[in-house]
Image (tube, rainbow, N blue to C red; front, top):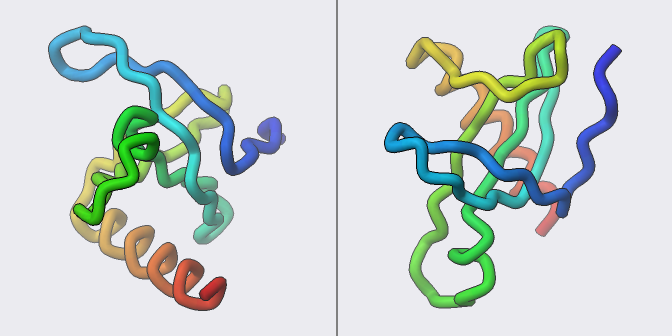
Length: 90
């Protein structure tokens, strides 16, 4: 069982250039028994511009580490589940 990841938690991830980026969890969703998180760059969230914030979806593996979502199919599922969740909160 993974540790619960809370909205608002900040993590450091390395991007493809091995640059460390701080991301904040803005939502979590579980689909078919797998946990996913939606994260956004902390600096984007702090800027409070009207531009859409980049949201990334990551899958939480059995060790509790974040993994990329490999398939478009899986991404679509997570993305639409997340959209639904966000619209319910409004």
